[in-house]
Picture 1 (cartoon, one colour):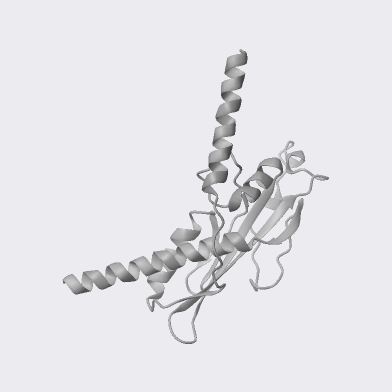
Picture 2 (cartoon, rainbow, N blue to C red):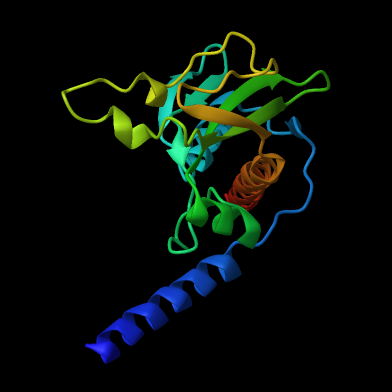
Length: 198
């Protein structure tokens, strides 16, 4: 029995270390980022694909360029495959307490051509005076996990019921924007190569 407990503990510690090792912080990226690609359809599709790697989308409208996500509970040290916690400190924080994030994205035409992508990720910590698990039972509906539609993304976002705002997660915003930029740069390069060889 002792050997099984030790093995489980060792496995958990290895998984936690792997989660922290994979969670490297991202370099600073301008927010909003300007993308030179003039093809709105390509920009929209690539932004949606990248955002879906981190969050489930609650609302998207390609005509007004807005995407809003459902809140997602932060990735812990034991979930190295999840990307929403950046850096070892963020993963450790999510391992020791319940943290969640939600994102708001706006795509607008850039003044000099192409498009600007604004990403805002809001982070919240569970209010332990009112734990979310206390709402279960008796068939009660939990309104705090419903997505909140905001009219202006750059205005402060109110936390949901049972949650305390921790402000914006600039590191995750930078990671998402860097991935969007990289994906679109690769798309432009592949299109240019295809034109050259045709």
